[in-house]
Image: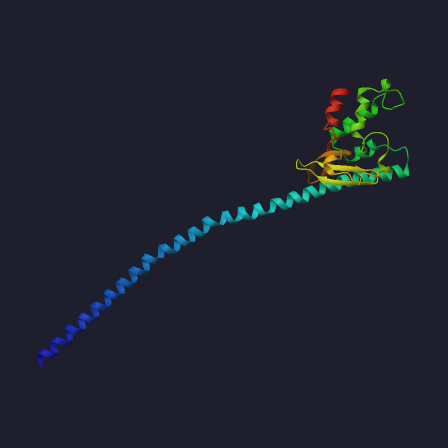
Length: 218
């Protein structure tokens, strides 16, 4: 009986020692896992800016399309107002309507052309100054054989360079292919929060009104 009483305390001591060892291993395991959670949080923070860049990039095409549509609308309004002006006054000039839609530089160019003393064609080519010739670039119609209110239709499109092309169709022009059609005017525009303004006008030969005024009227 004495031997049995001595053995039982030994067994109890061994069991307690085993439990302490198991608890220490569990605590150590928990401490080792803690940095992993921190690393996961850090990785999440690093990925966030990349998502923001993707979201911002997706907005740019929409803004470009909206801007192009606004440019096209401005040129539509320009031609609409020019036709209405001619209906109210047969002697109205395209230049006056264009002036209202132009920026300061183009307005100054229009003013120089209008102020030229020989800006009215009276049948004699040698009496037209070089400055007055710029009027043909600034006219909303192509040539001087008709006014814009006589056009059958005007089609508008935004070109790859951002300019807006107004193609003026007369009766019988409907069947002409776009590649062969040269009865048009191109408009350069600059847009801001306040709206879009026409900065230059080009004819079907690519001649710039601003450059022509600089060479012939100053």
